[in-house]
Image (cartoon, rainbow, N blue to C red):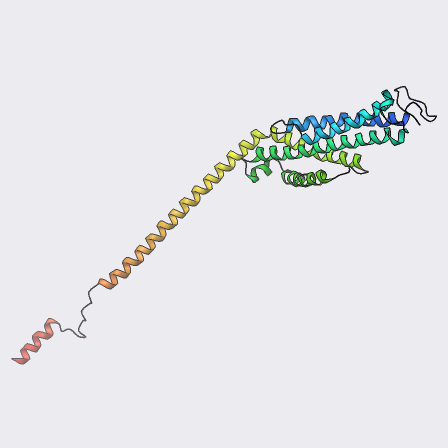
Length: 261
């Protein structure tokens, strides 16, 4: 079947075979959504950089799409073959590359959001963050999970059969991080206030501990000094004279002297 022979299946108004037009429509919608993800990934990147891997995937998708266009517009430049053997194959490959571009953009978004969230929370104590943003730990666990998923997505060679559902779930998870990041930006003033209160309380507690330690040391030193003074007074005191068992009164001494006379 040549490029101008549809095997009995008429061309659609778009100039493509009906099945081909459906796949191209899917490709166009996918590209629109992927482009939005790519733009956000570049926007959230700390240096506003483009992802080279994403650009490569889009370039490869464009290459396959141009093969399909050439099949219709320049049939002499491609082999005369059936649609299923050429156009369908290239459209599917183009769709696969756009999916990979979307995943690469989401991977970059996760890494950029992680960096931005860490930088935004770097100056606050964990207790302060939990007070202002109670779901902080849940978000942190989710962020770690998605970070681990980045390596898994990058290691895949094929997008898989359930790629659409996987991409939708990935987008849904990242929307949670985007929402958290936006909330974090609006919570800056409240975090500052709570951190100041926390620091004030900690300084007060620290001074109370220092004063308590000083008082304890002073009291302990006085007790030890008093004990040492008592001990030394006992050691240095002169021995007391032994008193006689019986002492005569003046009257007894007079009587004793009269008797001697």
